[in-house]
Amino acid sequence: MRKLIVLLVLTNFTSFAQLKNAKLYESSGIQVKSYDFNSFEPFLKLDDDTTYVINFWATWCLPCVKELPSFEQINQKYKKDKVKVILVSLDMSKKVESNLIPFLLKKKMESEVIHLDDPDANSWIEKVDKNWSGAIPATYIYNKKSHMFYERSFTFEELEKEVLSILNK
Image (cartoon, rainbow, N blue to C red; front, top):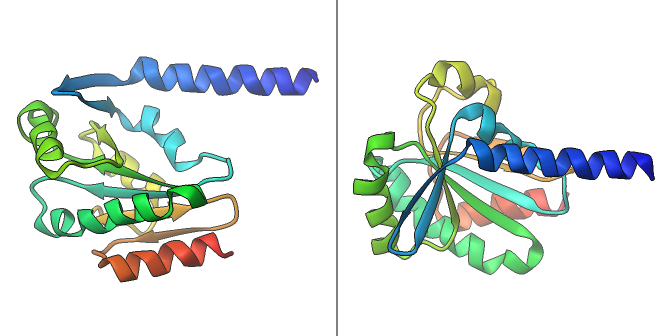
């Protein structure tokens, strides 16, 4: 029982620390939390019964924008299967309110969007995946049983195949 209480306290502390370290941007009903990498990193290690599809992208990246509807489809189609899409924007912090939020409103994005505001990419790219060159789009799919990293674009069919391969392991 004592271990359970300690675990719950630590879990709540981690969640609180993440919220405390996040900057919140809000406009027209859209909320985007902005994190430095240390505060964001726990999103890469969640240990529950969900499969996470984490896509690194930016509004200025044409291949990223082109594939976003595929992530939205995955988010909707597999929500009941405990698949969660998190779109991690790498837009510059000064562009969150002027570019990112209007983009999300225009595209009617429903997936969770997080802004990663850590300009020292050389210090954190390898922490996401040791083989990542830093190019985007890039996607990390994981659950308790398996994980894969992809430095490429996806069609819906390609993304669905990869998500299902992780789900079915």
